[in-house]
Image (tube, rainbow, N blue to C red; front, top):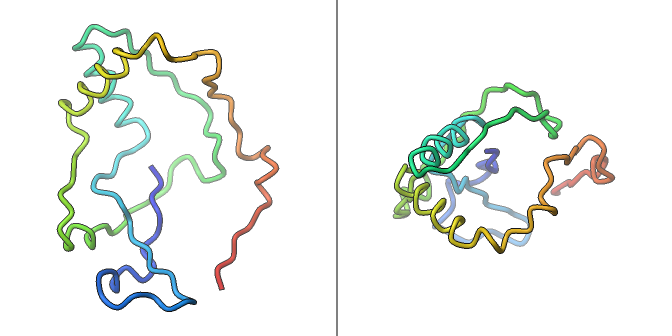
Length: 129
């Protein structure tokens, strides 16, 4: 999980941004390591009788494998967001829905072979002025 930054989030809900400003807030209510959601899915899947195998794949991103990340995400909660957490019940409902449409999944087009480092977009830089 790599949510966005919090530039200018203190102004969200007050005066609108000018034409040259961007107000950005995290749309996050929970923080997980990469492995935590996978382990939760496996636990719920095992309970439902699915065969869920976890396998480590090389990190396709350019960030470090381990790094400290502690986003602030209180502004939307302060504005009244009612979060939906990734509970066992939510995962169970999701897995049941996926299973319901399992025959519609084209497994031949699902790939875990993406490598951002080799992407033509790797040298793309976005600058906000």
